[in-house]
Amino acid sequence: MTHRALLLVNRQARQGQKRLPEAIRCLKQLGLNLIEEYTEQPQHLDEIIKRYEHEVDLVIVGGGDGTLNAAVDALVETQLTLGILPLGTANDLARTLGIPNSLPEACKIIANGEVRRIDLGWVNGKHFFNVASCGLSAKITQRLTKETKRRWGILAYAITALQVIWESRPFSAEISMNGKSISVKTVQIAVGNGRYYGGGMAVVHDATIDDQRLDLYSLEIKHWWQIILVLPAMRQGRHIHWRGVRALSGQEIEIFTRKPRPINTDGEITTYTPAHFRVIPNALSVLVPSNE
Image (cartoon, rainbow, N blue to C red; front, side, top):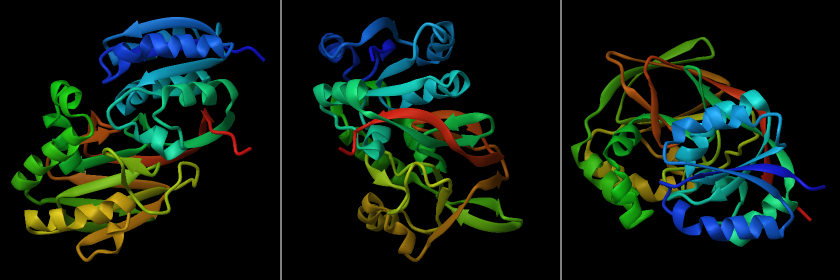
């Protein structure tokens, strides 16, 4: 079957402009008929996808997690299948789905992979793939510039994180789930739908993007240096076993804070507390590596 695909590339993504000709050549060689659209403003992706809704059966998004997040609401509305070209800095959704950073391999998955239904997270009307969080991650997102990401790549996250951690102060929050409320003093609350976020950290070691649950952790530690100690465990999602880390899971979660705090969804600030989260099971079709 020959797919007619809408190719959307964020030229501002770390490798978007440079790798674009290679991606187009590779996809065409694999037999895809492409409608090519480019933008330097990811917020326009929603409108572009809806414009071509009845002309294509596949949307290929080239960029990082922020670009994918900008497209997700329109993908849910149109129910078009998603193909991923990992051209961003972190590419955490691609990592969760087993899609390699190799462009030729990613193109082969789009042409010949299998379709998998995945869950999405939802917070205050906004869908997300990976993780939504407030506290440290939101501050890192606000501090992380495009120039820093272009220059340092994945190291940009570590450099910016260390700066933010040094300045971190706990804040008070109330977490409500399953009819119960918990008051916490925390530096970060993260709610995960997939497994990876923040350049390869895992929200929980056994999280999958189709387990129909949200996984929450709260970093309830008092001193900035304790965050440094827990960071290695966060790479494998084993931090949930540490003292000072609260872990919960469920299908619906609410977070309240004394003043509105920014919520970072897939690396972009998109909403503020109070925040109402829920999981949307089997929300979207994505092309992933075949098991054969």
